[in-house]
Length: 193
Image (tube, rainbow, N blue to C red):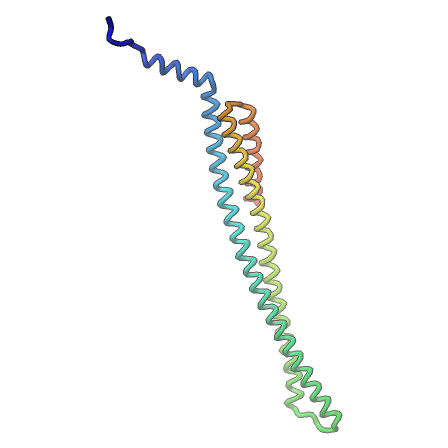
């Protein structure tokens, strides 16, 4: 009598592999590969989304700094205008009293008016820089939103891929791939904009 039952393990292994192939093994491998690919794309899209929003925040901060500098210039402009008005009032007082106006007073009013022109030019230049930074930040925020949509679509596709693997349903996997393609389209559009 034999000591134990002899089973051909190679034959059992072949039978198991055959059943897996027949029962959806190829489908599972396909789902795993496409899901891994989509996960990689989602990671790239997520990094790009974070990078663009950080750049936009830096530009918004620069725009705010430039606005503060422009506001300071306009305040300085107003101060020079007040000094010019005071000099003009003093000149009127001299004229009303019938006295000659001192040259220093006349020169001060002209100097303040000339300084106002330079200050206004600087303020306008700062406002132009502010507007350029703000517009660039707005464009980056739009790109960030497209990256975020890509990440969301890719994550939904990955989740549906997991459901397809668990249920071994090809239609769910095809649907996950369709959503994944939409996510890739959002990613490409964001990268090209």
